[in-house]
Amino acid sequence: QVTLVESGGSTVQAGGSLRLSCAASGNTFARYCAGWFRQAPGKEREGVATISSDGTTMYADSVAGRFTISHDSAKVTLYLDMNLLKPEDTAQYYCAARTGDCWYGWSEAGRYDFWGQGTQVTVSS
Image (cartoon, rainbow, N blue to C red; front, side, top):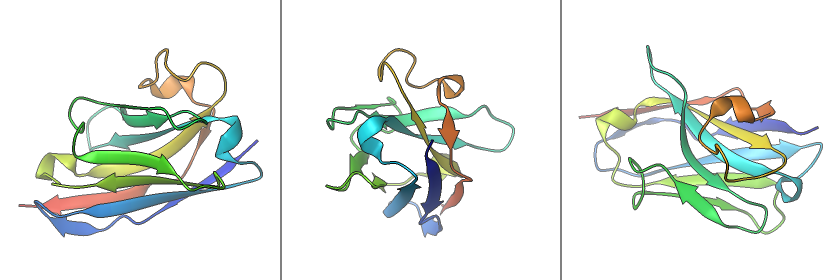
């Protein structure tokens, strides 16, 4: 079991940057595949990025080259560094964790066992 708590959401202007954090308690990300998801009003929750316990990463095409997912060295905090933000990045952002294969269906929310409560990111034009 792991409990996840996100922070760092805010309102920023287009072209700006933001860092989201996700703190793990009860366990560390060393035991899980971790991911960031987002959900805009009226849309399905979509996978943004994922990272394995050894630091291998994968990104959605819509954020590749702009967003970076990472752990701290102790693997108790997950980060999402977001650059060149666009209005279409506006959403509630969630961190999630799962066991098993990190890559098969990584962007499918139903494959994750543990979720944070979310943090809002709003990008103004």
